[in-house]
Image (cartoon, rainbow, N blue to C red; front, side):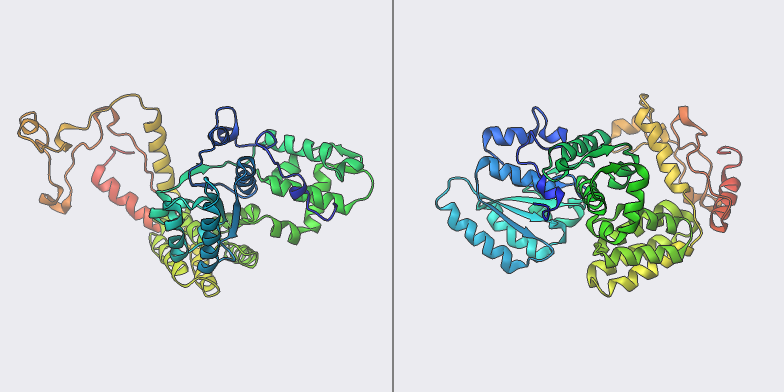
Length: 425
């Protein structure tokens, strides 16, 4: 028994044992209805690692007593998909309900692999259950996505982690043989990052590092993980701690640290497409208008990584990482859109668009003054003429503030001052 990982020993077998995702498995939740009716559409579970995607799929299958086939997108090809579908087709002849086909990390399937699933899903030969840590809108082909419901799973909150910890200490056959004293949980929950598997793996590490009484406190958790960092990172799948350090190193203009964390993630099997997406986000969020070329290069990196794959993609990722880390930084665009969204989200006033900016597709609208007195900027010197673009009640409201600490935005600030004077000061 002790050779089986704690996470596997504690895997739930019913929805009542399942921890977290109350919006899906709680009273009245969609997965409760699946079990009550026996009617289950193909669906995709989207969420971070360790939140119960595989477990949820297995519970549905076992509770409904239907065949359950599983494939890993990391190791399976089109041939494997077709073989499983053929087995399910034969099984379907003797069973009124289709078998479940569970594909872990479905975002790693390429287009041809996903295409091979379409016919079986459309014909009801299998009920597809996909699990992914990536946004299925980007990674799953449209024909397949349109035939699947997408359910979003969330990281476990602190109360969920506490329930899991108490269950492990109180009900696990191995841990219950030892006296376990829980003194502090802050470090344990922090390192777990809302990931149930991480928490249980950490407990496994702690239990293996000590004999007899097991004391859980912040100091022991931190010390033990530092000694077992390779094992811990390998178990963590998406390496949330490392990706956080990578992002902050690029933002902090340290190319050496950024390359180090990039190497750690690539060596740990991180999906290079995930890293490429992070670089595109960094280019907009943290560099922005200080160096607009950063977004162009990051987007080129994103395209190249999709086209060439590993191991060559490591070079493209390294180039983009170093370029972004050494670029001047500005988050002015990030702050501008957040400030505008903050206003719009709580603004209950239906602020009318100025009449001269409105479109006038009908004669009645023209008679009502829609579009009247609009000044076409290109008809004026310097392609600019002062007029009001904001709703009247927001005239002069400022959302974008150029960052004066970098040359590019200093020039933008100078131009805006010249055009608008003191209006947006």
